[in-house]
Each structure stands twice: as C-alpha cells, then as structure tokens.
Length: 383
Image (cartoon, rainbow, N blue to C red):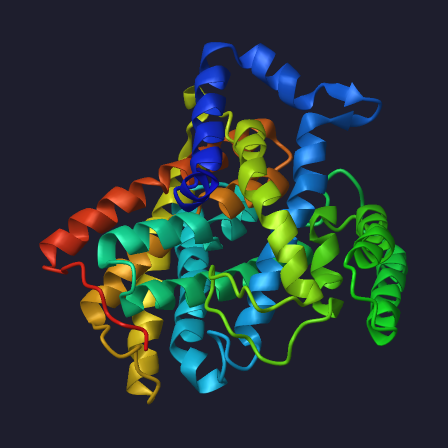
C-alpha cells in the first residue's frame, strides 16, 4: 500500500486537492488553519516549510550524492554531460521566458518570481515519464538525472536568491552553520555510524545558523548530509533500494523517505490553498515559463550537447528529448515552495502558486505530444 501511495504521489496530490477545495469554499478558515499559531510563535505553515522541508531537501541531497558516486547515474562526468547541459537549459529557458514576459506585460513587483519556473517535480516527472515512455526506457533515466541536477541548482537558487523575506540577511550567523558542519565532519572522522548525532548536533546548529542569518532554514541538512558515511561506490540506480548497502547515508534515506513521502500531504495542504480569484499575470508567467521555457531550454541544450559530441542516451532520439522537456515542466512541489519564499505579498504568492499548480497540465500535454509524435511505450533492458 505504501509503495502505491509513494509511486503515484498520492499524499501530495491529496493535500493539493484538499487545499484548493478548502481555500475556495472557506478561505478564512483555511488561512486560520494554516497561519494561526498552534504553539507559541509557530504556525502549521512554519512547521511544514521550515522544519518538515528540511528532510525533503535532505532526501534530495542524498539522491544527488549517490548519483555522483562511482557507479551512480551521474558518474562518470562524460555520461552526465547531456542531461546536465539539458538541466542548465531547463533553468535558463524558463528564467529568460519569465523575465521577457514580465518586461513586456508585467511589473517590477513580479521580478522575484523568476526562480519559480526553474523547478522540476522529481517524483511527478518520474511517474509521468514511466507512464509515457515505459518503465525502463532510457528517457526515464535521462529525466531522473535531469531532475536530480535540477534539484541541486534549485537548492543553490533558494540559498542565494531567496533569503528569508521577514528578516534581513545577517551573514555572521552562518558561522553557526559552519560549526554544525565541523561537528558533522568530526563525527565522520570519529567513524560514528549512527546518523542521529549528525542530525541532532550538526543539523540543529546548521538550522539555527541559517534561520538567524536570514537564509531559508529548510536547507539545514543540505550542509550536513554530505558528511554522513557512505560507500565509495554506488550499487543502485535512482529510486532503487540497495539492500546490501548498510551505510549511514542509505540508512538515513531508508528511515526518513516514508516520512517525507507521506508528509507531502501536509505540504500540499499548507501551500496549495489558492483562491481562483487570485489568478493574475504572474500565474501565466510561471505556467508559460515552465511549459515553453523549460521545454525549449531542455530541447535546445540537449540537442546542442549532441552536436558537441555528448549524445543522448542510447535508444533516445530528439522526439523523446522534446517530450522529456514537456514532462520536466511539471514543477509542482519545489515551484510551490519557491513561490512561498519569492513573494511576501500574499496575492502575488497565491497567483504564482496557481501557475505552479497549472504546470500539472504538462502531464496531459506530454501524453498528447507523445501520441502525436508516434512515441511508443517500450521496455528496454538496462543491462
């Protein structure tokens, strides 16, 4: 049952649907539920976005580390050049489209939303790719690599361009985060196998350092997870379970992934509650930048990479690349999160979130495009 819920992103989708219905039927009670303090100084929205999302981004970091190890999906570098170049296209494309749309039709108040359409929802993209191409088609692995690299860039974008809007950036507090990293490094040197000391001591200091510095505290474990002991070589592909790998890194992922997957219900519930009346130009800027900017950016850079001598994976052609770009334009989870930190104006925030929600339509467009282009679902051995 859990595998079914995880594979089809049921908790996240359920939270999103409930939030949309609640926010449009009874907006006042919805906003009270999300933003009123449930304990002194802490609302449900804060607990989800500043504490729960710490573990969401930590799991994303685990996937990035594992994919970069020898035997991982991004190793060696030459193998990863095409999806990495496509990833840069998938970041630059939507940024350019968003800024152009804002230049001609928008307002200076909208500029900070440029980072929202750079996101790809890795779980939904993986699901849609498997349904469109078939479970073992090389385009599925290509999309996973792209989404993982996209997560890495997304973490940098959040850290560098979206500090906490409610407090000024105070870089001196980052020394506390650095202290947390030094503790994690010392624990690794001491060959401490349990991940708990890394999280409780290094992670706590990292969280407070980021929170007090004005940088979003949800990134706290991004600076700690790389110190968790892990093997020198990776034995599993992305989303596969390496049952013989008992490293601290893998144990952390194994213990917390179910919590994160199921906890996305609360994330969807607290972040997707947007009233349809809040739709404005920002909504369409985000949606068009995702659909057109990300798709074209991925296609152009993937095609250019092939011309430079770094081809697409064997068994994947330019039609597959185009449809992969469409699939990657599903930006839901991270796009919702970035929308929440990009704008302090709740009306703009809601409009941007609606654009992120509309990006789910890319799944339907991907299916239609695959049929129009004659792409058939295939099963190709990875061996």
